[in-house]
Amino acid sequence: MHNYLKRIYEGKRVLITGCTGFKGSWLSLWLNMLGADVIGYALDPPTEPNLFTILDLRTDIKYLLGNVSDYDKLISVFEIYQPEFVFHLAAQPLVQLSYEHPRLTFDTNVMGTVNILESVRHTGSVRVCVVITSDKCYENKEWIYGYRENDPMGGYDPYSSSKGCAELVTSAYRSSFFNPNEYGMTHEVSISSARAGNVIGGGDWGRDRIIPDCIRSLSNNQGISIRNSSARRPWQYVLEPLYGYLLLGGLMSKNGNAYSSAWNFGPNDANIISVKELVDYVINCWGTGSFSLDNLDHPHEANLLKLDISKARAILGWMPIYDVYEAITRTVKWYKAFYNSSTNKEISELTLNEIRSFENAIHASSVKC
Image (cartoon, rainbow, N blue to C red; front, side, top):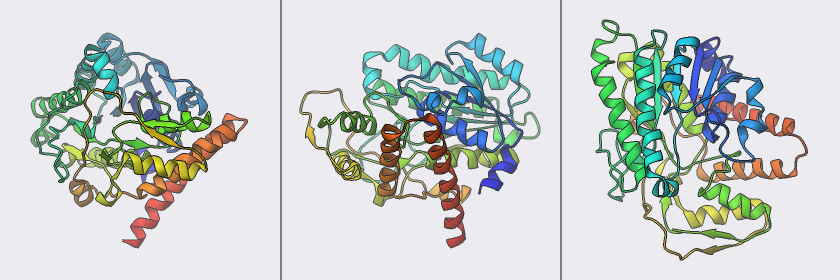
């Protein structure tokens, strides 16, 4: 699998927005491993500590400080660096924060996406653009069925609504300016959106996210306070959707009209567990700890949300590799190593090995199939 992805991305100019975030840092590291010429465009890392700094990615990629809301600066980056692939991950990613700052959330998540697609439209080098949104983009009816890519967009809270809007923006640009039926005739650009959520893995210290909340408490020998303990989420290891994005990008580059659409990347139904079950297993992996229920009033959050991933399975050949318990085990192992390690170099090597192990697991899974 490493060699397959390397043949696609080695030597290619790849622009990643949101490269300083949790997922953006993992993706930047992976693409750098594959030999891509990575250009990162983002605000400075949102937390301290943060994975971007731990991995010393400033020395491995071309990092450009900027906001996707700043169109003039963004388009200048496209003009100067002429990327071939664009992975748009920059976002305001938190439900709770969206209640506090709705205007910021819509400006970043909706107009930021408009700015990216406008930049793509005016840059002749771009062949592939993958817009990363969220599973929360769907109009959530909290039914037991997984949402399919053609189900209605929606959103109760500002964050979810902004992601639904970003999907509609992407669809409008794809239809109006990069229509797959006109691929190879009026344009050579493939535009897709990718929907994933509840990603876990080492290196996330984001606010109001369950794994970082657990790790902060456990590392300080404090009890974990959890809200909405019965809520069931499609937890998945961070490398699962990133592999989906990379696989999708490669297929888009070869056959843009066939893969320009929306895609779900999520776990199998058997791996959708409650917040309480997740926290119980985190504590078990850590070795000590306890939790209590937070019964205070909080802004609305969904209780049940899952994705139908049959399209990605059938058409892309993508499928989940790790079950939820393997994902939690690897995540906690990473944090334990971080808090017990004396050097960032050791953590960087551990993180690289996680990618290598995952690539091997993909290969083993494909051979088994």
